[in-house]
Length: 104
Image (tube, rainbow, N blue to C red; front, side):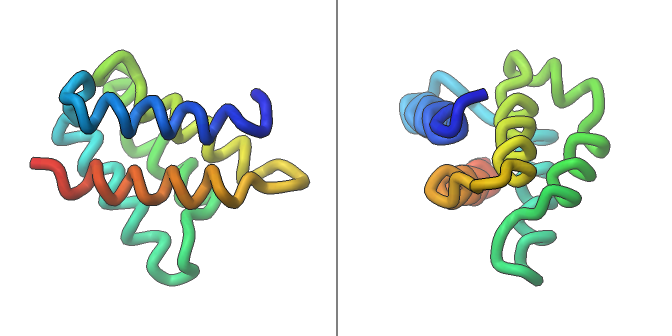
Protein backbone atom coordinates (compact mmCIF):
# COMPACT_ATOMS: atom_id res chain seq x y z
CA UNK A 1 0.00 0.00 0.00
CA UNK A 2 1.30 3.38 -0.95
CA UNK A 3 1.10 6.51 1.21
CA UNK A 4 -1.62 7.88 -1.07
CA UNK A 5 -3.72 4.72 -1.31
CA UNK A 6 -5.92 5.69 1.66
CA UNK A 7 -6.69 9.06 0.08
CA UNK A 8 -7.40 7.45 -3.29
CA UNK A 9 -9.67 4.79 -1.76
CA UNK A 10 -11.50 7.42 0.29
CA UNK A 11 -12.04 9.66 -2.74
CA UNK A 12 -13.27 6.74 -4.85
CA UNK A 13 -15.73 5.65 -2.18
CA UNK A 14 -16.92 9.21 -1.55
CA UNK A 15 -17.58 9.67 -5.27
CA UNK A 16 -19.43 6.36 -5.47
CA UNK A 17 -21.42 7.25 -2.36
CA UNK A 18 -22.43 10.60 -3.87
CA UNK A 19 -23.46 9.07 -7.19
CA UNK A 20 -25.29 6.11 -5.67
CA UNK A 21 -22.83 3.55 -7.06
CA UNK A 22 -22.18 2.51 -3.46
CA UNK A 23 -25.10 2.28 -1.06
CA UNK A 24 -23.88 1.36 2.42
CA UNK A 25 -25.64 -1.55 4.09
CA UNK A 26 -27.00 -1.46 7.64
CA UNK A 27 -23.88 -3.31 8.76
CA UNK A 28 -21.58 -0.77 7.08
CA UNK A 29 -23.47 2.15 8.64
CA UNK A 30 -23.32 0.43 12.04
CA UNK A 31 -19.57 -0.12 11.75
CA UNK A 32 -19.07 3.51 10.70
CA UNK A 33 -21.11 4.66 13.70
CA UNK A 34 -19.09 2.40 16.01
CA UNK A 35 -15.85 3.95 14.75
CA UNK A 36 -17.15 7.49 15.09
CA UNK A 37 -18.27 6.80 18.66
CA UNK A 38 -14.87 5.31 19.51
CA UNK A 39 -13.10 8.31 18.02
CA UNK A 40 -15.00 10.86 20.13
CA UNK A 41 -12.72 10.37 23.13
CA UNK A 42 -9.49 11.05 21.22
CA UNK A 43 -10.71 13.06 18.23
CA UNK A 44 -9.76 10.51 15.58
CA UNK A 45 -10.03 6.83 14.83
CA UNK A 46 -7.45 4.61 16.46
CA UNK A 47 -5.81 1.44 15.24
CA UNK A 48 -7.48 -0.58 18.01
CA UNK A 49 -10.92 0.85 17.19
CA UNK A 50 -10.51 -0.04 13.52
CA UNK A 51 -9.36 -3.56 14.36
CA UNK A 52 -12.33 -3.96 16.73
CA UNK A 53 -14.68 -2.77 13.99
CA UNK A 54 -13.22 -5.22 11.51
CA UNK A 55 -13.62 -7.99 14.07
CA UNK A 56 -17.20 -6.90 14.80
CA UNK A 57 -18.12 -6.92 11.11
CA UNK A 58 -16.11 -10.06 10.52
CA UNK A 59 -16.87 -12.08 7.42
CA UNK A 60 -20.19 -10.39 6.49
CA UNK A 61 -18.40 -7.04 6.22
CA UNK A 62 -16.06 -8.48 3.61
CA UNK A 63 -19.06 -9.57 1.53
CA UNK A 64 -21.11 -6.37 1.85
CA UNK A 65 -20.71 -4.26 -1.29
CA UNK A 66 -17.70 -6.28 -2.39
CA UNK A 67 -15.96 -5.55 0.91
CA UNK A 68 -15.38 -1.91 0.03
CA UNK A 69 -15.71 -0.61 3.59
CA UNK A 70 -13.60 -3.50 4.91
CA UNK A 71 -10.82 -2.59 2.46
CA UNK A 72 -11.03 1.05 3.55
CA UNK A 73 -10.69 -0.04 7.17
CA UNK A 74 -7.61 -2.08 6.29
CA UNK A 75 -6.15 0.99 4.54
CA UNK A 76 -6.88 3.05 7.67
CA UNK A 77 -5.18 0.43 9.85
CA UNK A 78 -2.08 0.46 7.66
CA UNK A 79 -1.97 4.25 7.72
CA UNK A 80 -2.32 4.33 11.51
CA UNK A 81 0.46 1.76 11.91
CA UNK A 82 2.84 3.54 9.53
CA UNK A 83 5.81 5.47 10.85
CA UNK A 84 4.55 8.58 9.05
CA UNK A 85 0.78 8.76 9.17
CA UNK A 86 -1.22 10.10 6.25
CA UNK A 87 -3.11 12.65 8.33
CA UNK A 88 -4.94 14.05 5.30
CA UNK A 89 -6.05 10.58 4.27
CA UNK A 90 -7.11 9.72 7.81
CA UNK A 91 -9.14 12.93 8.11
CA UNK A 92 -10.81 12.23 4.76
CA UNK A 93 -11.56 8.66 5.77
CA UNK A 94 -13.10 9.81 9.05
CA UNK A 95 -15.26 12.33 7.18
CA UNK A 96 -16.37 9.56 4.83
CA UNK A 97 -17.29 7.37 7.82
CA UNK A 98 -19.44 10.21 9.14
CA UNK A 99 -21.19 10.47 5.79
CA UNK A 100 -21.74 6.72 5.65
CA UNK A 101 -23.19 6.80 9.16
CA UNK A 102 -25.68 9.53 8.20
CA UNK A 103 -26.92 7.69 5.09
CA UNK A 104 -30.25 5.97 5.56
